[in-house]
Length: 442
Image (tube, rainbow, N blue to C red; front, top):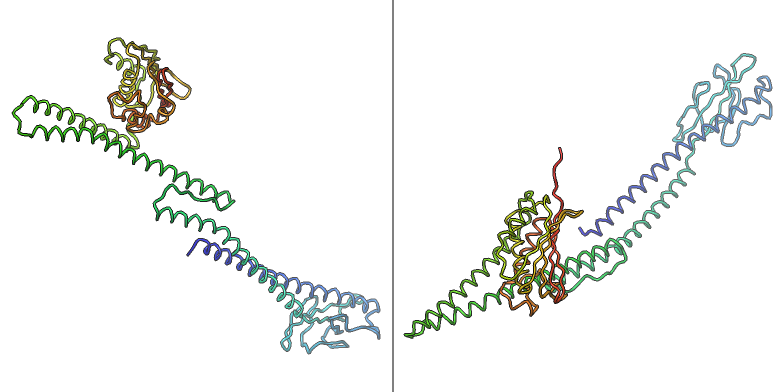
């Protein structure tokens, strides 16, 4: 069953149930009130007329009215002897002092009330009142009320159907658009905002945001596939051509040796590419790793002491010790290795590399800065993308364009954040911000 029809059905059942409850409750409550009012009116009428007889010393006046409204009155002695009166029907009921009794005669219900008239301490005269418990008017009122309630319920159901259909119409539109996107495979399309309802508008925005992310992922995947193919194509082409040349019937062994040397170099490059791809994929597909507390300053100091700097390059360090963060030593050294290699590669020939470790309010921060060629704002936007080497000033260097992407994935596994500042001709600064080490308290 469709969502809209289910809501209509549930709401209609609720409206019908509430209408039935209200009608039944009104009928029961009204009947009780009618009975109570009829009985009270009977008692009041009999009591008032009995006071007239009591005032006359037990003598019933000749003009005594035995019909007062809907109440029929009659006078009895204590032994049940009838003196005089008026009756709506033949009712054979013994005297019951001060009791309102219900009697059914010929299909009609009557209330009977006997009142004892006090005469100088004697209770030998009774005034009986009889009233018919007629519900004709009340039944008409109940029927009218029921008809009105049913009409209101029907109107409510109709309004419910209209409102629900209007409410679910944007959902149907969104569903058709989703089906169209799915069938055509065109994820550049977006859901239109066909409603002013905040919840549905937010749903459309969230879905469009998801499509934006998917489109970005697909584009990255296409670019990644294209980049991998491009990286692999060049060495494979060289290997193929050199192999064909070496297989030619030639007696020049030096040419063959040179071809084999070229094939070996290109094969080593292919191996480096595949190793880098495998390593990147290994980290990119992992959700978490086992982390342990490490002294960021001590590990960095030890690594810098063993790092082979090129001739003419100076390393300046400003390291704060006792800074403990959650990480994994081998992977952290891999991050540090990559950042230092980039600083050397794109720094000045006789430049300076600055490495800083410091505490922050949120944890700790590693900073690696060079004074080299820097990069443009456009390059800075894509510097962490896989295989991105668009800046001509940086593209003549060796590398696959996976180093910083790998660093970013490792930093993500640490629960840390990485950022970069750079400007052309002013060098580059990479910042890795680590979170506080979470310790358990007992």
